[in-house]
Amino acid sequence: MKIAILGTGSVGRTLAVRLAGLGHDVTIGTRDVEATLARTDAGGGGDAHFADWVAKNPAITLTGFADAAAGAELVVNATNGGASLDVLTEVGNRGLDGKIVLDLANPLDFSRGMPPTLFVKDTDSLGEQIQRAFPAARVVKSLNTLTAELMAHPGNLPEASTVFVSGNDIDAKHTVTALLTEFGHQDVIDLGDITTARGPEMLLPVWLRLWGALGTPVFNVKIVR
Amino acid sequence: MKIAILGTGSVGRTLAVRLAGLGHDVTIGTRDVEATLARTDAGGGGDAHFADWVAKNPAITLTGFADAAAGAELVVNATNGGASLDVLTEVGNRGLDGKIVLDLANPLDFSRGMPPTLFVKDTDSLGEQIQRAFPAARVVKSLNTLTAELMAHPGNLPEASTVFVSGNDIDAKHTVTALLTEFGHQDVIDLGDITTARGPEMLLPVWLRLWGALGTPVFNVKIVR
Figure 1 (cartoon, rainbow over the protein chains, first blue to last red):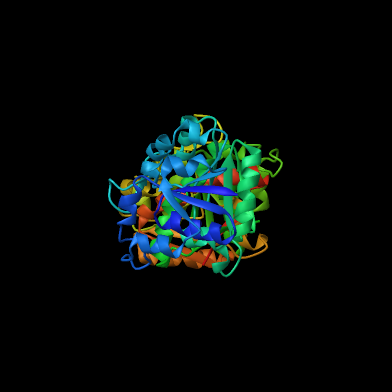
Figure 2: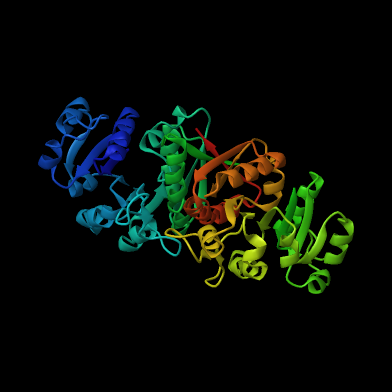
């Protein structure tokens, strides 16, 4: 599948490599290609040049947000939650109409210190904000409840765990679920329409505190039933 | 242990029977004993007289809120979240000072329809509100993330799952964790001080939607790591 990933942070890069490794045609979108190539925070240790990462991953094309989305069937929102609507607006309705938008972002608000709070919650969600802003896009919220490594490689945990999908378009949820299965996710629960994204987004406060209590972000919820 | 349970709903009754069965000295508190005895919603089918439930459980004393708490070492808040502060105020500071208050309640707001929203969240929690209102009580938030049956009988699920404790008093968390272990809980994660109650309380939105998606409240999260 032709997939555009918006966002060059660890989530975007991890999913780009994983999807390319699975044989998908992956383009990664950024605001300013030259500025991104000059970055030096692309390594695990925080010191590798982004240009080196690009050179190591020749199958992945780096381009502007709108160009990345233009040719894609599925657009992954891997930007920070606070930037997501701006970035998607840069892509524009024409670039998103009819497309599946897999929204991984969390509405984290760092302005009150750590741990972050949520800038939208309970009676609305970031997933819904995106769906309302781009009504012809087929938004699916998923994977926002786990760290990048486990989004792409759930088999790194000692047993199968659970991920969720929320969205208004059944076919889009089926396509996303198939991708999740390719990653290795064995338990995907369809929570319902895009309003149900409020649930997984509001998991972040306990997720952040579990990170603190366990000393690692490498964990996930499993719904035992 | 001498335990008072505030609240005569299914959570209060289920825990009262379980704790009495484990050999604890259980008193169940209600606002108006005569009115509670006259109720007809105490059965699984919603039609049994509360007086019949009391007769079937002779080891459990039914009394007023304040009298129940007066002799107890541990007070369980099993009231509805919206009523919790009023009920605890009826017990009063004298009845709670120095005691462990195990807070099971969720701050559910049904005024906007179903599913309910939360009347406090993200920058505060019901657990914190209770701790602030009764500063000499030792509040521990726990068990609010699962249905009454599984609070008391976690072994009814096919595998071990996870519960959380949040609170400022380490000894109080140890006492609550020991009780949870008596119930059969095998994985209790200490999230930290009472501010961490925001996390488990904000699990309710996904819990409510999972109930809808799965068609049963008999499930729980397990933190796989």
